[in-house]
Amino acid sequence: MTRSFRAITLALLAGAVLAAPSAASGQEAGQAKRTYFALAPATAVYAEPAARAKVAALVIHRTANYTTHIACNELPKRGIAALCMSTRFTNNEFAVDWDRIALDVKAGVEFLRKQQGIEKVVLFGHSGGGPTTSFYQAVAENGLGFCKDPQRLVPCRDDLAGMPKADGLILADAHPGVPVILLRSLNGSVLDETAGKFDAALDPYLTSNGYSATASSTYSPEFQTRYFAAQSARMNALIATAQGRVKAIREGKGTYPDNDLFAIPHGGNPGAGPGGASQLHSLDTAIPLRRTRAPQKLVRNDGSIVEQIVTSVSPPELDTKETTNSFDRGTKILSLRSFLSTQAVRSSNSLDGIDHCSSNNSTICAVRSIAAPTLVVGMGGYLFIRDSEEEYENSAAAKKELLFIEGASHGFTPCRNCSADPDAYANSVRNLFDQVKNWVDATMR
Image (cartoon, rainbow, N blue to C red; front, side):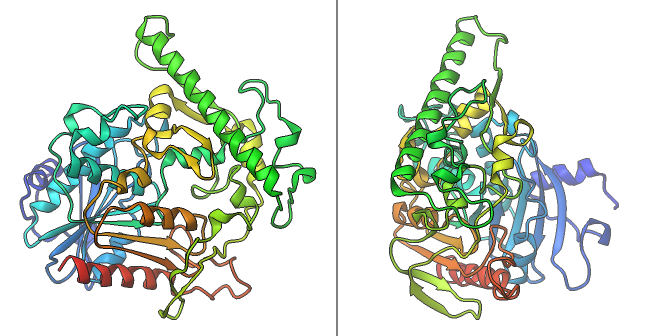
């Protein structure tokens, strides 16, 4: 390359148009032009279609590296530019300071606004990118009053004022909020956070309570009610403990003057994706979080669309006992700051008694304050079926749409073990991004 990395970075930050990158930087004949660069503390890749785009999507997570996200391949194929980013906290959950990530999103939006030909900017929130992008947009549309609400466990800081709004929001199998995932992953039978003791009457891994290690577990309605309440009681106690330790730090009585370790044993560290751990609906396929409450649009594998009650076709996750009950695999290592700002939420039960707006990390709370056109797409081969529907129900957007992609895994690819035929959902990626393009064409052009 003829220019130094520093020169290229400075040019990009200034919104300059770069010469076409070389093959070493990702461009090959017939493919999207790709430019890799630093963007504030974050890093990014900008993938542009062959023909100049008018719409660009910003794709970002919280801690995952999304510079290689599938959207950077699929969106440019459909004429949509894609800025795929990693944040300042990539692969470092311990260090996350939630509202700092909004500044990384801001840098991405500002970059896209300066690109020649781009008229509309859409936020693309996949998985943990859902609360990331929706929080940003809610603050951008409503100002600091949204994120400084006294209801929040950790209000935002003043430097989030004046962030530029995006023109639309796409939630693709988005978390309802990272704290909700932790809440539902907590082993509700834990009696003591340090002793490793469990209440047998609440242990989800006892056959006497409905557990199966070989097929779907079957928990009684009575057990579910008690377990969901126990998960909330445990989360609320963790919040109280963390707040007490923060208070001690402020009073000069803490071990360290600014922050401290906060470990959650049996908190669930799923091996693949945000499901698993002790979420009952990852174990028991009959629990209502796996299906919609009302008939919704389902994009079938052949591309046709039907309206029906949508039920996840994903099988039960049979390895969650090991990912929850062992110390090495089941302990979440956080700091007081990362827990309270990013992982904590108040609730009375983990099913439908969640105080979503007690956290700034909440897709469901954020969409209540977002007017921008919103597309919610759930993956039919995963666990966020009811959550996606609830995000749609809570959306304040006048223009909003809800779709489900039959047999798509959380990463959009076909769920190969969701059917006896491993190719039953072979078109999931194409169907998802075709629907995204249709929505962009209808709302952003």
